Length: 289
Image (cartoon, rainbow, N blue to C red; front, side, top):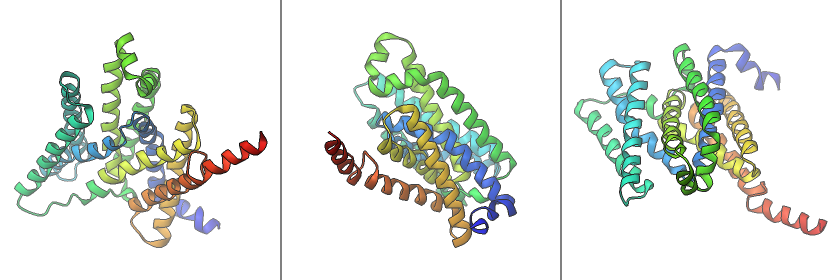
């Protein structure tokens, strides 16, 4: 048991780096996913993962596998799409989902066009699917820094974000925090997706953001407990996914996300908010009464 569960992390440095990256993502990206879920914007994470692609591609084309260039490019592309979609949604009759869908599709098309103009196959597979087993010091520092900024920002914007989750119109009517909370939160989504693509890729990063949040929603109702539960599920998925990748010789990113998916399916079945679990808990309450 020790050799199977603990020895890989003690014997290999790349496994310890991957574990640290998973912990940072669980503490930063997953709480953001909880607020995305509560604001009924779960699919926004998927859209934004495509929106940052042209910026990362431009950074790669200009400077190669430069962490800084790809990070800055992804952040700029994501923020441009977020701000443009937000401005259109607040100044026209278009809803936010329609506005975001339009801009992220344009951004995705721009990314594909950039790749095609290069005239050769572009090695962006690590951007799309990540390589959590090859995290270096710079990548870990970047992920840790974004996680720290995210936690500080969530602590500062906690009350306005909670109010926006349940009644956005009320927050707009009683204070000036609405645009700060709205655009600040969207910026956090972009930062964490850029952080996540260094470890899991732009596509897989959405999985560690949304799947643990959706699982936690089925188990608990109070928001603070939900944030802790979601981060715990995300980190446990990271640990088990890394171990599965090590022992079965499969890609680490998909293994981590599939583990989170398995936890979600299990939650759907047996959690108090799930299918079978809801009936069981209702029966217990009925018998107790």
